[in-house]
Image (cartoon, rainbow, N blue to C red; front, side):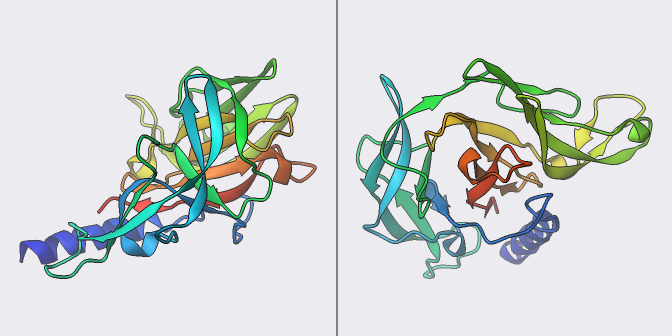
Length: 245
């Protein structure tokens, strides 16, 4: 009975977490694949044992994209499996290598050193922009609520990337603005910057941002400047959307 209740709670959380589109400006099939080391629900993992992926790794002299062979093991999913079933997947890299993210099928990325940006704060709250300094320019990520929504209990506020005289909405979030206390994102989502810099080596800012829209969902998303349209700063290349329970 406890297992059934836990599964029901998990399914309710998953449904809540996938109700909103991932990107505000359009829904599309992304060209690349993304994965991360750790244990995941099996259906979330596209990687296979022994494959070679590009790993973003931090070394003593900076950040690098390295080609690495990964290991994918079938393991028990502690959330949904009932013994002896095993539907989970565990991803690991080579010994001593701890990738921030694993990527493939993104032709704009090549092995070698990459330049990282300076981050002041990785998380961003409603009304508090996150500053990113890259190549002498200041970029900001901010949940920007329109003036006409001020004073209302809830508003749909776009997460905006701005810098170099340009501005782009990445995703819209419902934000609660109570009369007392701080504003908060609906579903207790906690979006944050995971990495910023120049992955595709075109001299412009790229982002790895968790665009989660629910406390039980992670959506690390690679946004590349080299894929951007003329009216954009970045465009998505890959996402690894996972759920906690």
